[in-house]
Length: 117
Image (cartoon, rainbow, N blue to C red; front, side):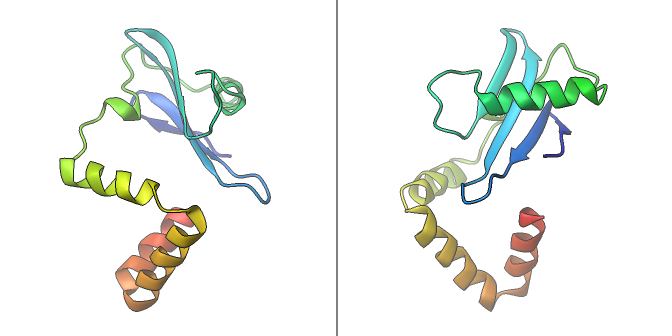
């Protein structure tokens, strides 16, 4: 996991062998320390957020006192609708659907490869 600045906080992606990856963000907002993670943990401060925070602190990350979490960013309503639809598709089927499109479109393929690192 490589922490990277995002919205005045820090973001990172956790990948565990055989598990789906999780995008996590931590920062200091008007509400105090805030964490957002894609994992299914019931608590707001999951192990991914704790690990990202510890890594960022070890790396000397400079925190903003007015960070903006990803969930607060404006999203085009059409994109939000399609993201909800995509979220209802089982992960394996969605991955195959994206791969099918990427196999027929070089731009999609490059974006897919870039996102995967």
